Amino acid sequence: MARTAAERGAGVITYAEATDIEPTRVHIRDRLTGDEHTLRARQIVNAAGVWSDTLSDEVELAPSKGSHILVPAARLGDPQAAITAPVPGHFGRYVFAVPWHNGLVMIGLTDDPHHGPIPDRALPDEGEEAFLLDTINAVLEDKLTTDDIVGGYAGFRPLIKSSDSTDSADLSRRHALLRDSRTGALTIVGGKLTAYRRMAEDAVDDVVKVGGLRAGGCRTTELGLVGKGTPAPGLPDRLVAVYGTDAATVVAYGDADPSFNEPVREGIPLTGAEVRFAVDHELAVTIEDVIDRRTRWGLVDADRADLYDAVARLAPELTTESRG
Ligand SMILES: Cc1cc2nc3c(=O)[nH]c(=O)nc-3n(C[C@H](O)[C@H](O)[C@H](O)COP(=O)(O)OP(=O)(O)OC[C@H]3O[C@@H](n4cnc5c(N)ncnc54)[C@H](O)[C@@H]3O)c2cc1C
View 1: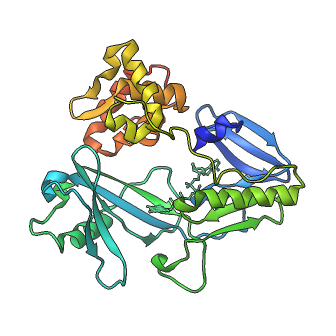
View 2 (view 1 turned 90 degrees about the vertical axis):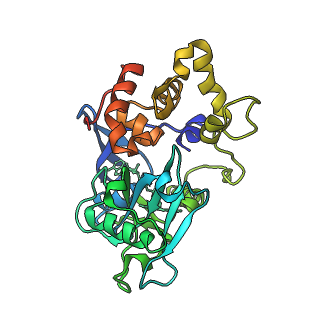
View 3 (view 1 turned 60 degrees about the horizontal axis):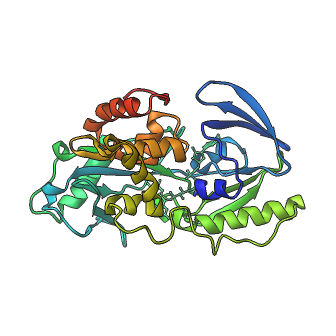
């Protein structure tokens, strides 16, 4: 999505943390160098998700943590479809075991209120692992244990605070536009990933109207994302599934140097070509960008050290946030 925006003239700057907003000014800190800058803009949009309340005192969120665990698919008999287990005591709430890639199944997810600061990277805690295992085990003959867990990840839903409910699973998933009375910045928050285009349209319409900006009509209902279209014949299915028509660009690295077609390690199909694509086309500047964000190969704990070494070798220009 960011690449599609960049293709149409948007400036994309990663690791630029907004530390404070003033009317028509945003203070920025470079998370990699610590350098500080001030940007000026007629209209400012705060789209910092579950962190958006750190940039506007008037945004009140009730974050909810959602955790997933990964287990080997073989432990569930290599399922080809999702397994669904009802959450006891809840109507219409389920835990899913969904076939993921590379012989793994992802089991999720939790929905628990979270209090306190939101970390950059979160993992399931012991209680969440136990909840997911207990719930899915109710429909399995061969029960899973914590020894089967090979990895996992967690995120925080940016739910908007409501006085009506204390159960985060009941809070509205609708999005909201909020104008900060002190800074004039617009916060767009809440909502669902599936509604991202509509959220962006609502936010842009608002800044155009309030800021008196000149703009044409919204075009994103018709706009495909980069990688759309019919891929050239003969491209590997796995790469087409991830990159669409851009699979051809990934494959070209291997055509120029066949060593880029090699998996970074036995058991991890990520290739050198994909690492180079992340750096050259997807603005990856750290090893974590490659293994956690542009790809998701870093989710298996036992693979992380090898991934760090392989990516550092293939893309020596990358820095790292922290080794681990
Ligand atoms: C576990 C989980 C499961 C979910 N499942 C679904 C689902 O199945 N379907 C669905 O539609 N939705 C789902 N959602 C909801 C969906 O992920 C969110 O609604 C969506 O990501 C919100 O998008 P956003 O752009 O507002 O925020 P985010 O995607 O969180 O993006 C905010 C961005 O702002 C950046 N940022 C934060 N602070 C600053 C700062 N100070 N300066 C600069 N940048 C900053 C962050 O790094 C981040 O990149 C799920 C959410 C979670 C947590």
